[in-house]
Each structure stands twice: as structure tokens, then as C-alpha cells.
Length: 384
Image (cartoon, rainbow, N blue to C red; front, side, top):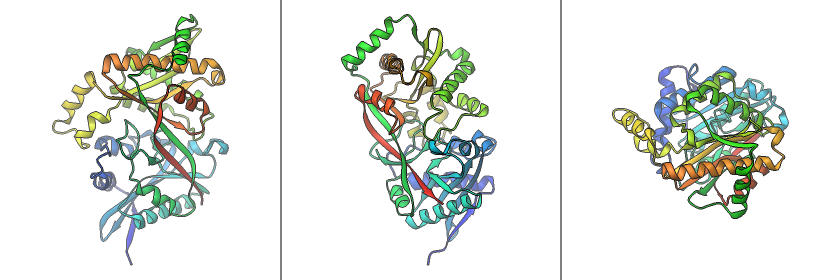
């Protein structure tokens, strides 16, 4: 009988071992993009990632005969516990994520240990995988393994979905979709007319963000986001520390003509954030900036020529969401960014998402511009 020993990460060396497992177990997958090691370590380090300020986290490594064969995180987000239960999180709901395992038996042992830890903390339900916040890399990839992920999207082996299905008791709770868009094609005539009408409306202004006022603009965008997404399934609000952290993290890939703010009668009411796909630049670095990775990355960031852009976030203030104005503003921001992406960055395709599969408004917008689902992630639920 196999002897699989699972122990918590307790020091800096073990934290690095925890991170290194992902590189070893996924290194042969041509579509896995190795994250920068410094960022991967920061993600799981208290004092670096502000998620730890409102979450209890246990990182665990599975070993067989002293050799690391898998890992998992178990965590309880206290802000998620405070959300209404009908929105997916809520009282008694914990999470696990960052799963890596050599085989099914190791995966089952890790999942069982994560569940045990959550029960010991009083949790009665688990939503997983979340790695680690809903805002980071949520869900298990079940469609789209045949191409690399874009910036800030997860990519897990196909077999992990089978491991979760066979672990017992897990049922799909929600699907998260990304949409692929050929940005070199103009939008359908109806969408062009909607955009043109908006551009003639003196009450509407679509503007670039102003990077010289970066902190102010970042706060504005995240305030709109917290309002726009507050009723969404899985929503957890950003904290002040997370706003500052996100701003610092995004700043190198923020380009003023790729992030739009929509104003109505002078009030900022919507935004759309678009990022050049940094994965195109970091994939060849194999997770390391030294000795020459820094220079290559800095050169790329000066003026990226990039095949793909990703729209990770957009939002319209809640009071406008049921109006025609919401979709008009969305189409206008998409079109303005599409033009800039082609003209200034040589972009060929865009990826929009993730989008909740039952977010009818966003799904309708994605369908209207003739984008197609290219990746699907599933978040599973289980009663403990």
C-alpha cells in the first residue's frame, strides 16, 4: 500500500518547493505558460499577497518516500463568508485550490486533506478550485486545453477534472467562459450603428485612462467594479490593500489607449480594461527573469506588438445595467479599444472574460460581436 504523507508548508524552503511543483508537473505541456517565479512565490506568501489579510490559508505538500508528488491550498476567505449565500459564497463556505498531483490517488489524498482542514475550521461547504481568490485563477479548465491561456488565466491538465469528478460529492456550481474574437473584422452593421449613435450623443464621453493620475484612475475603476459586480455570483469586494496591490501589479501592462472609461453627463459610469497578452512575452522565459529575462521583458513592455489582447474586467454601474445604455457603452468601449489595438499594437485577436455562463447581459454582448467560446472553467461545490 502506498504511503502518501501530507504536511503543511511551514517555512520559506517548503514554500519554494510548493511553487516548484507546478513547473515540474506541467513543464511538458506545450500550452502551459510558466508564470514568473517571483510572482508565483508572492501569491502564496503572507505579507506579500494582501489576500492573506482577510483569509486563513493552509498550503500542503504530498510526499511519497520523501519526494514531493503533489500540493494543494485550503483557505477560508472571511470576506467571502460575509457575502449572501444565494450569491455562491456565504457563511460556512471554504475553498481549496492550487492543486497539482502526479496521479489520481495523490489528488484524492490532497483533496480529502483540504476538506478535513476546512471541516476543522467549521466549514460546511466547499467551492473549488479557487487559486486562491475569486479574482485570481478560479475554476478547473474543462475546454480549451489545445491553446495557451492569456494573461492571468489558469491552465490545468485535463486529467484534473476527472480527479475532481471521481473524488466524490463534487458537482458543477458555475461555469466561467472566455470568448475569442477576431478583432481584424469590423463588427456587424447593427453594432456599428449603435456605436455611431453613441458617438454623436453629447452626453456620452468615452475616454482613455490617464496614466499620470494612475492611483486615482485605478481607484475609480475598482470603485465602479465593486458596484457593478456586487450582485454577481461569487463576488467578494476588493479591500484597500488589494486595490493598491492590483494597481502596482497592473501598472507595467497598463496602456492608456487600451483602458476606457465611459462618462455619462460627466459622471464615470463604466469602464473596460484591456491588457496585452503578457504570456506571449513570458512564455519563452520559463519563469525566470535572470540572467536576460529582465531586459527582454522591459524591451517588450516599451511598445508591445502582440497578437492577442485580453479584456479581463469591465463593468457598468448597477443603476444602468438594465438599460439599453449599458450595452451601448460596452459596444462603444470595445470598438474604441479594437481600433487602437489594431492600429498601435498589431493585434489580431481578443479574448473577453471570464464571464459567468448565466450572465445574460455579457453573454448577449459577446454573441452580438460574433465572438465564440474558446475556454471554459468549472467551479465545483460539495457539502462537507
